[in-house]
Image 1 (tube, rainbow, N blue to C red):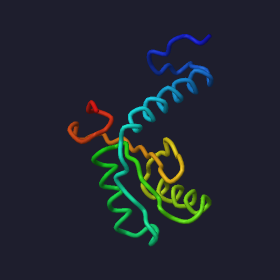
Image 2: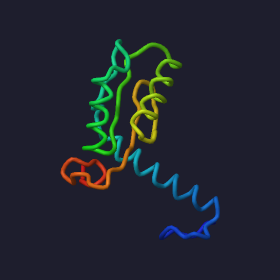
Image 3: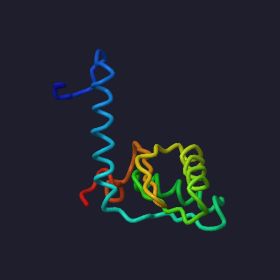
Image 4: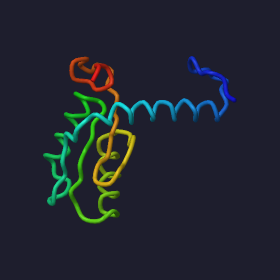
Length: 119
């Protein structure tokens, strides 16, 4: 059974790093469970307005949900991949038509950030 990870140690094994990453992802998913989608992608696809709103939402809230009301699964997956690449965010979770994205900001407003405020 692996020991408790209290900090980032330069001599950690890959297994311990994976456990830390899984713990963080689990915490992010728990926070995102209570959130509603902020950005909705419709039939017109990824427009400039959608990308600007996504950038603003990630800067303000850090952890957000987006809803994709488009085509089939392959189209949704391609759009999610493009949104992640263009925004510089990380994909936390993808369930059906909803994806959760994370982009941490060093100077985030504690009143708006979903990672810093209590929900």
